[in-house]
Image 1: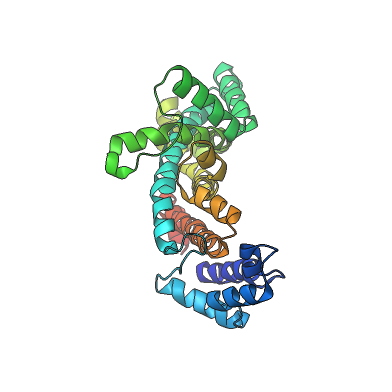
Image 2: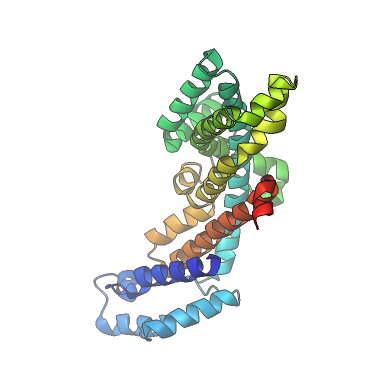
Length: 305
């Protein structure tokens, strides 16, 4: 399934960006370019070769780590993607850590105080988090923490060469903006999963043996409720890596999302093609690892193999 998904995705990406009607060389040179100039550029870029030959050449290059050269920058695409991942991947990891911490706290609080004040407060916060767009929250964070309090920079990234501290500090506000919506969604999933498990017979048995409500919650309920939670977390992490375009542009972060955005603006189709394929690989890989993690979390799945 892993390989079949990657092959299918690569075909779709190639067809959409390379085969559908339209001339990439004409798009790059503009409408005023002469036919001879367009033909010369198309030959240089290999656009006059048969589509099957171009597809095989692209996949063979990816398999050997050769992503090709950017049309707009004239530099290896691998270097551009590596620089973008150096920002986007730590940003996604930091946002995922914040998401998990907030969602676990609020979700368990809501489930433990079902239909009481704690539950109402947590659900209200999660509803607000879902309703607030992350780009608008990002602007509010800049206005309050960067402009008014001056605790953080309004944007930019100093690079990892400047030190881990300054680099992580530049990612805090973007991570908060990304984590708010994801934490709100995950809070509701955790609350629902915990409440479902708390109605099971083994929970009542554990309580009848004299275990406290907190002990039952942490030792028995939470682990059994993790299967749907881990599924959503895997999807959220993939979404954080692939969906940071808006937030990275708000904070002027040179991440992978901003690279894709700039490549689209520059009509640099090869960069868009390679970056999207890489994101597909990451999404599929994360879901593959989540499937394996199920076996670690739930011993019953190992027994069924």
